[in-house]
Length: 137
Image 1 (cartoon, rainbow, N blue to C red):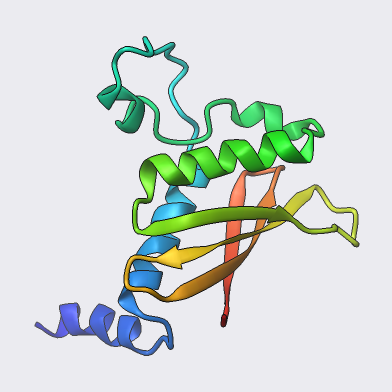
Image 2 (image 1 turned 45 degrees about the vertical axis):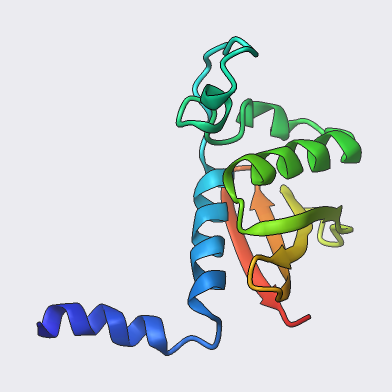
Protein backbone atom coordinates (compact mmCIF):
# COMPACT_ATOMS: atom_id res chain seq x y z
CA UNK A 1 0.00 0.00 0.00
CA UNK A 2 2.78 2.45 0.84
CA UNK A 3 4.45 1.82 -2.53
CA UNK A 4 1.31 2.86 -4.43
CA UNK A 5 0.76 5.96 -2.27
CA UNK A 6 4.24 7.16 -3.17
CA UNK A 7 3.19 7.60 -6.79
CA UNK A 8 -0.29 8.89 -6.00
CA UNK A 9 1.04 11.64 -3.74
CA UNK A 10 3.40 12.74 -6.49
CA UNK A 11 0.53 12.86 -8.97
CA UNK A 12 -1.68 15.02 -6.73
CA UNK A 13 0.99 17.63 -6.03
CA UNK A 14 0.69 19.14 -9.51
CA UNK A 15 -1.59 22.08 -10.21
CA UNK A 16 -2.97 20.67 -13.45
CA UNK A 17 -6.05 18.50 -13.81
CA UNK A 18 -5.77 14.78 -14.41
CA UNK A 19 -7.23 15.33 -17.89
CA UNK A 20 -4.43 17.74 -18.86
CA UNK A 21 -1.82 15.41 -17.34
CA UNK A 22 -3.19 12.49 -19.34
CA UNK A 23 -3.32 14.50 -22.58
CA UNK A 24 0.25 15.76 -22.11
CA UNK A 25 1.46 12.20 -21.55
CA UNK A 26 -0.35 10.94 -24.65
CA UNK A 27 0.94 13.79 -26.83
CA UNK A 28 4.49 13.22 -25.61
CA UNK A 29 4.27 9.51 -26.46
CA UNK A 30 2.72 10.29 -29.83
CA UNK A 31 5.24 12.90 -30.94
CA UNK A 32 8.30 11.03 -29.64
CA UNK A 33 7.31 7.81 -31.44
CA UNK A 34 8.14 6.86 -34.98
CA UNK A 35 5.33 5.22 -36.93
CA UNK A 36 6.12 1.86 -38.54
CA UNK A 37 7.27 2.06 -42.12
CA UNK A 38 4.20 0.31 -43.46
CA UNK A 39 2.18 1.60 -46.38
CA UNK A 40 -1.46 1.26 -45.37
CA UNK A 41 -4.22 0.89 -47.91
CA UNK A 42 -6.45 4.00 -47.63
CA UNK A 43 -9.54 1.76 -47.65
CA UNK A 44 -8.48 0.35 -44.26
CA UNK A 45 -9.93 3.29 -42.36
CA UNK A 46 -9.64 1.79 -38.87
CA UNK A 47 -5.99 0.92 -39.46
CA UNK A 48 -5.26 4.62 -39.98
CA UNK A 49 -6.10 5.12 -36.28
CA UNK A 50 -4.30 2.05 -34.93
CA UNK A 51 -0.84 1.15 -33.70
CA UNK A 52 0.18 0.77 -37.37
CA UNK A 53 -0.04 4.54 -37.79
CA UNK A 54 0.84 5.75 -34.24
CA UNK A 55 3.69 8.26 -34.21
CA UNK A 56 5.40 10.57 -36.64
CA UNK A 57 5.42 8.79 -40.00
CA UNK A 58 8.90 9.91 -41.06
CA UNK A 59 10.72 11.23 -38.04
CA UNK A 60 13.97 11.60 -39.98
CA UNK A 61 12.39 14.18 -42.27
CA UNK A 62 12.17 16.53 -39.29
CA UNK A 63 15.96 16.87 -39.50
CA UNK A 64 15.48 19.00 -42.58
CA UNK A 65 13.82 22.37 -42.62
CA UNK A 66 10.23 21.52 -43.45
CA UNK A 67 7.93 24.28 -44.49
CA UNK A 68 5.91 25.57 -41.57
CA UNK A 69 2.62 24.54 -43.15
CA UNK A 70 3.83 20.98 -43.77
CA UNK A 71 5.07 20.56 -40.20
CA UNK A 72 1.94 22.04 -38.62
CA UNK A 73 -0.43 20.05 -40.83
CA UNK A 74 1.36 16.76 -40.03
CA UNK A 75 1.32 17.38 -36.28
CA UNK A 76 -2.31 18.54 -36.39
CA UNK A 77 -3.36 15.42 -38.33
CA UNK A 78 -1.60 13.18 -35.79
CA UNK A 79 -3.29 14.87 -32.86
CA UNK A 80 -6.71 14.70 -34.54
CA UNK A 81 -6.24 10.98 -35.20
CA UNK A 82 -4.96 9.93 -31.79
CA UNK A 83 -6.06 12.50 -29.20
CA UNK A 84 -9.82 12.91 -29.42
CA UNK A 85 -10.06 14.81 -26.14
CA UNK A 86 -8.80 17.97 -27.89
CA UNK A 87 -11.14 19.80 -30.25
CA UNK A 88 -10.26 22.69 -32.58
CA UNK A 89 -6.55 21.78 -32.53
CA UNK A 90 -4.24 24.52 -33.70
CA UNK A 91 -0.43 24.45 -34.08
CA UNK A 92 1.75 27.58 -34.28
CA UNK A 93 5.50 27.57 -34.92
CA UNK A 94 7.41 29.94 -32.64
CA UNK A 95 10.60 31.78 -33.51
CA UNK A 96 13.71 30.00 -32.29
CA UNK A 97 15.99 32.73 -30.95
CA UNK A 98 18.82 30.52 -29.71
CA UNK A 99 19.27 28.78 -33.11
CA UNK A 100 19.46 25.37 -31.43
CA UNK A 101 18.47 22.13 -33.14
CA UNK A 102 14.90 22.39 -31.90
CA UNK A 103 11.46 23.24 -33.19
CA UNK A 104 9.41 25.41 -30.83
CA UNK A 105 5.65 25.38 -31.29
CA UNK A 106 2.38 25.71 -29.41
CA UNK A 107 -0.46 23.21 -29.34
CA UNK A 108 -3.76 24.83 -28.50
CA UNK A 109 -7.37 23.82 -28.54
CA UNK A 110 -10.48 23.14 -26.51
CA UNK A 111 -10.67 20.17 -24.18
CA UNK A 112 -13.76 17.98 -24.06
CA UNK A 113 -14.58 19.41 -20.62
CA UNK A 114 -14.89 22.91 -22.14
CA UNK A 115 -11.54 24.18 -20.86
CA UNK A 116 -9.22 25.98 -23.26
CA UNK A 117 -5.60 24.97 -23.12
CA UNK A 118 -2.25 25.70 -24.68
CA UNK A 119 1.03 23.79 -24.47
CA UNK A 120 4.32 25.46 -25.25
CA UNK A 121 6.30 22.63 -26.81
CA UNK A 122 9.87 22.13 -27.87
CA UNK A 123 10.92 19.20 -30.06
CA UNK A 124 14.64 18.45 -29.91
CA UNK A 125 15.56 17.12 -33.34
CA UNK A 126 18.83 15.57 -32.13
CA UNK A 127 17.21 12.95 -29.91
CA UNK A 128 13.51 13.50 -30.76
CA UNK A 129 12.60 14.35 -27.19
CA UNK A 130 9.66 16.61 -26.49
CA UNK A 131 9.16 19.01 -23.62
CA UNK A 132 5.83 20.68 -22.91
CA UNK A 133 4.74 23.39 -20.50
CA UNK A 134 1.20 24.48 -19.74
CA UNK A 135 0.14 28.00 -20.36
CA UNK A 136 -2.92 29.16 -18.49
CA UNK A 137 -5.59 30.32 -20.92
